[in-house]
Length: 570
Ligand code: PEP
Ligand code: MG
Image 1 (tube, rainbow, N blue to C red):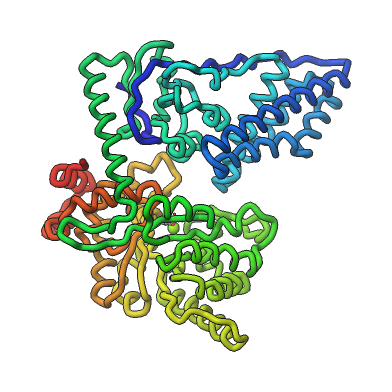
Image 2 (image 1 turned 60 degrees about the horizontal axis):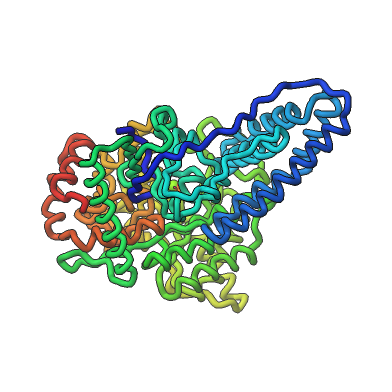
């Protein structure tokens, strides 16, 4: 058995189809006929463009507009004047063949994007890599593996899958895929989830071990790959396949059902979103609210700040789509790792501990007030709640709230309607706030625990650093103790408390959080139905009776083992 990262759920059993890696090696040559090289380059670019347009069209049909947008990014690379001119200039000045000029220029751009702090920009390096391979293949007259021509049931095995490979997968024949590299958030993993094809990525060695035509099992639930399975294993996994299919049918039926435990305790299952387009998936998956609307995307990928009107439109759209369901909008959490080039903030030694989020908004109150006005104006279109990120002191909360009230009063004086029932809360993602939650609970309307940051700050382990990821422990007793403190403090003052960090959607965390008394769980839309199914099988009373024991463990392992034993995930 080979272990990898479970990146798209489900189980697939079929024959191995090794994706042939095209041989793109070439010789760097000096050339005399410059014109000929430029013509070859232009041709290769044109054919690639036409191919990509076709792939984009197919992708639109199979995986939807949003995901097909990746190919718009690829097409943009192909028509980027800066990049094309650089390749042409290289051919002219260095008098080298088009292949060498393409590779050298692409590598320069790839290195530039890879060095950027912003994850979105770093992903652009993968786009350039993908597009360059296609153009190179055309320059060399090498054919790419034609995924579209597969006509029997297979599982794709490859070093990596580019987004354009993934978009060509025909679900009828491609039952799953597994790769050497990649992570849960890579493009291909995201696409696999929307295509609902089981996938295990990051196996490191699958292409070395698998042989074309032999049988392979991809277990996208646990992240396992099995080569040449015995008859016994095949029947075991066929059984698991049936169970998973049945589970999915049960989950689908829960779309309009309440999220209620077996002993009649209701909680809210909400979703995290980044754009108004994401609301579709929230409603499709039976979300009872939006627990976190990350507004950063309105500010990113642009050359200037978004206007009040632009923001108003986005907030109104989300609120209207959600009807009377609650929508928690988080004010701008920018700075640090998520930089905005047009703000020209100085580089920092420790961006996660630096000038970001509410710290930036309180100093640049012009930016903050614009967002607050847009939110207040949109408030009459739905059930809006406003939440401030990265609050470390009571003073910060008071200042932010008073700016909000100032803008509200101004709008009222201007004769503009504002809802009177907007709740104002904070994210609890800094340990100082979790520790004095009781003092905060007297002043805020609600808390939302941001465990993504709370864990990194409590454990002093950068959430992006692979080498310290062993310390990033959601079930560490210190984290459970802080979460418990926040919930107890909120309830003592009659406030509700949610969680919008990734932890809220994890099957091990759900029983723990229910036992501690969490009121709202906010997660990615596709996790909602499985979470609802799990919660409906749990008894709140039983979980609460284990609370003291849960909080008394010494290590994260003990906590996890206890939950797995007492509440096996069905
Ligand atoms: C968090 O910190 O848990 C959170 C939800 O915010 P973000 O992941 O955007 O930092
Ligand atoms: Mg955070």
